[in-house]
Amino acid sequence: MGQTTRTRTLAKGRKRRRPAPTEEQQQARQEAMQAAHEDMLARLEGLAADPVEWLEFIETVAAWGARYSLGNQILLMTQASARGIEPRMFMAYGARDGSSGWRKHKRTVMAGQTGFNIWAPVKRRLREDEREDYEKRTGRRVVRDAQGRLPVIVAGWKFERTFELSQTAPIVPWADNYQVPTVQVRRQVKLHGGKQAVLLDGDDPTGVYEDVVAMIRAEGYEYALAEPGSEYLGRANGVTVAGPATRLVRVRDDVSDAQRIKTAIHELAHIRCGHLAGQLSYVTPVQHRGRQETEAESVAHIVCKAFGLDSEPYTDAYVMGWADGDTDVVRAAATTVLQVARDIVDQLAPIAPFDGKRDPQPEDHTPTTTLQAVAA
Image 1 (tube, rainbow, N blue to C red):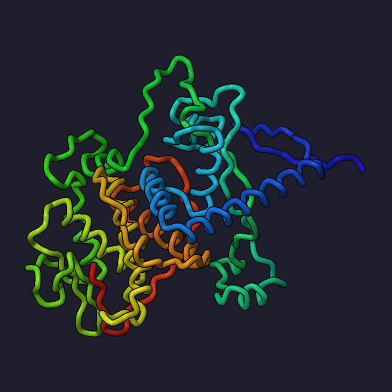
Image 2: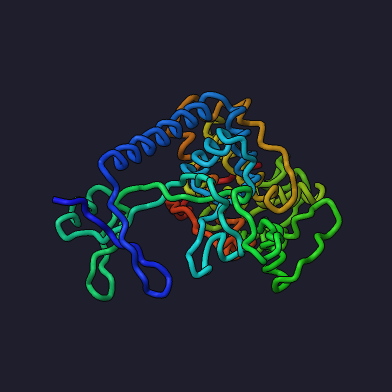
């Protein structure tokens, strides 16, 4: 039997046929994916063993605005490092009609450039004979849609290609005026209807303090500035307390504007990371608080840096030994930090101008049931 073929839809309804991958090509792809997976595990082991690597990881993530999931962060970091590229912006080549990717921005990928691999989900509709096993495996009840069909699931992973800005050039006769849509630009677009606004002078350049306070209140918490040593706050910069009759956030009223926004984001991160859903209290073993404080401060650092405030990464990673060499702990913490930081950034500055897709991320928000407190 001859080699099978598959079709690829092009613009204006035209189609062209291309050969299906050969066994050698499929094997090469599988080996590349396996190598990428092994490299990710090695990187995670490094993060677990050396707190310095965690801080360097958070610094890199902050520079990129946490736009990618953990696997793709590591995958892109590895490829960029191997090529000696300081990445600024990744995007797909785009559709031929110029509706997406670099083509939408009147840019083309230069000849001879090799794309960067990122993990992408392979989705398909669940089959009837898989339903029972899927429910047992995931612990989720399968819900049919309005047409009675089973849901679409992620059946596996594959590589997709994306290209860095340095690999592209403007399409003639368009000018080379592409501007990387940083978080600050996205924020300006949101606030000023697309007009560029000059950031305010002062100790807090982010301009997001009031919105962060509103996000805390939207979570059901009372927010207020408080004197050092006052009830709940004590000697901490900030504190979040949750219980059946008490849900509040307090931030010191005598700190700089820069410290105030960082602490407010830190406390919002405690809420969004689910730290108030366990049995946390002031007498919780210090190693548990070490991980939670590291997660919350890592989120705060990423968000602050995305909006132009370069805060110092949390140093408890050095003194707490929160990971203790456990790769699973680091994986869970990194996934939580990336998800929460990106959700906060996206809420403060919607991602639409990036013309990109969010990586899939797990969601886990457990309701608070007992009185707990987290001090910064």
